[in-house]
Length: 80
Image 1: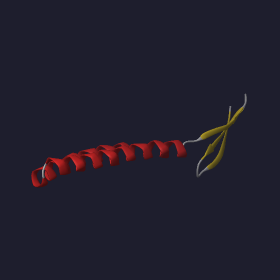
Image 2: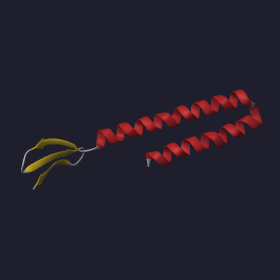
Image 3: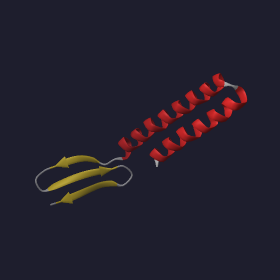
Image 4: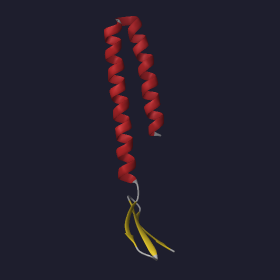
Protein backbone atom coordinates (compact mmCIF):
# COMPACT_ATOMS: atom_id res chain seq x y z
CA UNK A 1 0.00 0.00 0.00
CA UNK A 2 2.79 2.41 0.86
CA UNK A 3 4.61 1.67 -2.38
CA UNK A 4 1.46 2.62 -4.28
CA UNK A 5 1.18 5.84 -2.24
CA UNK A 6 4.83 6.66 -3.03
CA UNK A 7 4.40 6.09 -6.77
CA UNK A 8 1.14 8.06 -6.88
CA UNK A 9 2.75 10.94 -4.98
CA UNK A 10 5.61 11.16 -7.45
CA UNK A 11 3.27 10.83 -10.47
CA UNK A 12 0.85 13.48 -9.22
CA UNK A 13 3.78 15.76 -8.35
CA UNK A 14 5.10 15.54 -11.89
CA UNK A 15 1.65 16.30 -13.34
CA UNK A 16 1.12 19.28 -11.03
CA UNK A 17 4.62 20.59 -11.75
CA UNK A 18 3.95 20.42 -15.50
CA UNK A 19 0.67 22.31 -15.06
CA UNK A 20 2.26 24.94 -12.81
CA UNK A 21 5.08 25.36 -15.34
CA UNK A 22 2.57 26.28 -18.06
CA UNK A 23 0.80 28.76 -15.76
CA UNK A 24 3.45 30.32 -13.52
CA UNK A 25 6.89 29.50 -14.92
CA UNK A 26 9.86 27.29 -14.24
CA UNK A 27 10.85 28.51 -10.77
CA UNK A 28 7.44 27.83 -9.25
CA UNK A 29 7.32 24.49 -11.05
CA UNK A 30 10.69 23.51 -9.58
CA UNK A 31 9.44 24.44 -6.09
CA UNK A 32 6.35 22.27 -6.54
CA UNK A 33 8.48 19.39 -7.81
CA UNK A 34 10.83 19.72 -4.83
CA UNK A 35 7.95 19.73 -2.34
CA UNK A 36 6.44 16.66 -4.00
CA UNK A 37 9.71 14.77 -3.89
CA UNK A 38 10.11 15.61 -0.18
CA UNK A 39 6.57 14.35 0.48
CA UNK A 40 7.37 11.15 -1.45
CA UNK A 41 10.51 10.60 0.61
CA UNK A 42 8.52 11.16 3.83
CA UNK A 43 5.97 8.53 2.71
CA UNK A 44 8.81 6.08 2.04
CA UNK A 45 10.41 6.74 5.45
CA UNK A 46 7.05 6.34 7.23
CA UNK A 47 6.39 3.06 5.42
CA UNK A 48 9.70 1.62 6.63
CA UNK A 49 8.96 2.77 10.19
CA UNK A 50 5.44 1.27 10.03
CA UNK A 51 6.74 -2.10 8.87
CA UNK A 52 9.50 -2.08 11.51
CA UNK A 53 7.04 -1.14 14.29
CA UNK A 54 4.35 -3.69 13.40
CA UNK A 55 6.44 -6.74 12.52
CA UNK A 56 6.56 -9.64 15.00
CA UNK A 57 9.47 -9.93 17.42
CA UNK A 58 11.02 -13.24 18.49
CA UNK A 59 11.21 -13.11 22.27
CA UNK A 60 12.31 -16.63 23.23
CA UNK A 61 13.82 -19.52 21.30
CA UNK A 62 14.85 -22.95 22.51
CA UNK A 63 14.90 -26.45 20.97
CA UNK A 64 11.19 -27.05 21.34
CA UNK A 65 9.43 -23.70 21.05
CA UNK A 66 9.58 -20.21 19.65
CA UNK A 67 7.66 -17.33 21.25
CA UNK A 68 6.61 -14.49 18.93
CA UNK A 69 5.34 -11.16 20.21
CA UNK A 70 3.01 -9.68 17.59
CA UNK A 71 2.00 -6.01 18.11
CA UNK A 72 -1.74 -5.73 18.69
CA UNK A 73 -2.24 -9.51 18.81
CA UNK A 74 -0.26 -10.71 21.83
CA UNK A 75 2.17 -13.61 22.19
CA UNK A 76 2.14 -16.73 20.03
CA UNK A 77 3.95 -19.92 20.97
CA UNK A 78 5.10 -22.15 18.11
CA UNK A 79 5.96 -25.66 19.28
CA UNK A 80 7.87 -28.09 17.08
